[in-house]
Length: 189
Image (cartoon, rainbow, N blue to C red; front, side):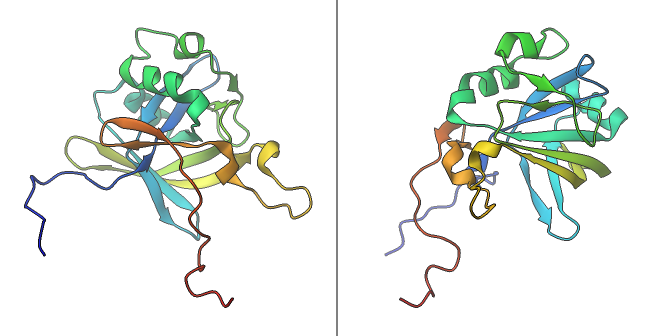
């Protein structure tokens, strides 16, 4: 049974995390933008990427500062995440408009978002023009984890309890139910 048809080439790898990327030289001189083109690249050293259109207001800020913070979002942050993605920081103060709280970065100059359960501070290693977007390849230099999701007995971070949000083909969704843990398919009973 072959029910698949050819479809136009496109970026159909979903779901993706819907993140808010913060950038700028300080809390006062900062902006945020919604990014879905984001991912991990390497484990050691820890590296990730974001892809941003050059015409975006934050693109020039990131390119000048060569650092940014990836802030994971939750279902509670859905409106703010969407709003920050459809409005420009050159026209609006996104902190005031979204009600999100900027906190001074720990290892970078740009702020992180207090409401985010996990903020990943990054330093750009290279900028790769790809066409519609340019990829900022970055080394992770610090991770800020919300204490509410750290089990005090095991010191394990349980991001699954944070109510993360993802992006799928133009829509936002809350993270679903747990199906298993890595390796569950081969675990002895």
